[in-house]
Length: 97
Picture 1 (cartoon, rainbow, N blue to C red):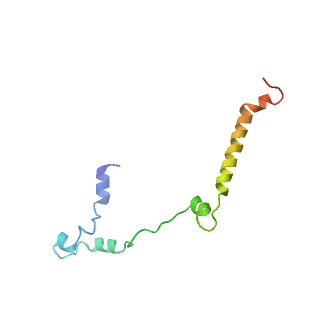
Picture 2: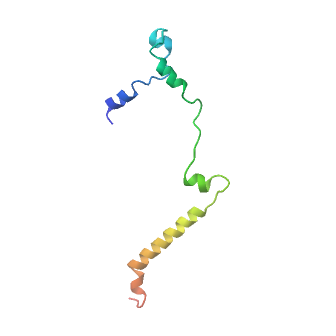
Picture 3: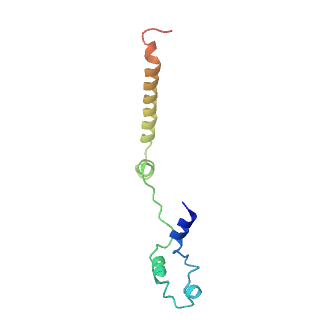
């Protein structure tokens, strides 16, 4: 991303501690009404933590279980054995070398 593009996109957002009415517009504050309205509608305080996906479904909360990890391990074992059988072991089924 070009620096000028970022500067253009973020140019209208002035941090609230810098954009006080007395400092920016000498107390009139007519030009800052949209900016003050924008910052007044922002949520206050820390953002709520949202844990989602597989971790929240299987490993957190009252339904915590290790079943998905066990199934992944068994699936990888089955896939690995199938590939190994097809590549090498089926040639030794009826006679060894």
